[in-house]
Length: 153
Length: 114
Image (cartoon, rainbow over all chains, first blue to last red; front, top):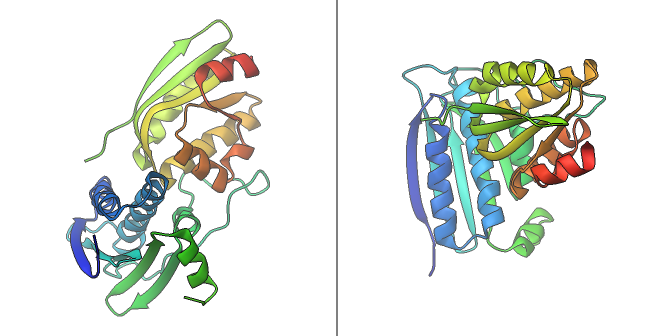
């Protein structure tokens, strides 16, 4: 089965819990494409965290705001684009892992972007006029991902 | 939309087990704190059992980290059990396994830690 340029788009409200809708949809798409279960789990967490960042930082949990999730299936990879409405004024941040010497501050550590970068093969954050876009890519074959990372593919 | 976290506290001879049932997210702070406080009353080892926690996000992890930090400050011993292999990986990534030992199962935790 080829997957070239199948597109699936969702709009989820900026309400905690609805990130699971995007997470489950991405999971279903990845399974359909033949991703291994461990990679599907990685994608589930990354998509949920990207949506949570968009809801909180990009959309300030505004009731009338939405998070746009666009999944693009290619033969060798799945791209997931998560776009907020830019109401927060701050682009997503990548944080360092917490350690004994770097303990969590309060109850809302910002480790979502860190997890996304660890779990996905490629991550790109772009500030657009309409909001912040997080583009995440996972490849069906890890070898392709490795080649892409060093610019040979 | 969310599967709100519930907890179940079991007092064993040498440990207090806190079963986490549902999603561990930003809304779990109060219930986790309440369960942890109740578990500390026994003065025994505290085991957080994630067997029925199917969704844990970064806000939930931050709450767990905060709780473990508090336990460390107060000299309380807390271990974690029954995480899926995915969440074991996630907890390792964020450094959470530096705050508490993670065991494969409740029995493994009780055998090794008590």
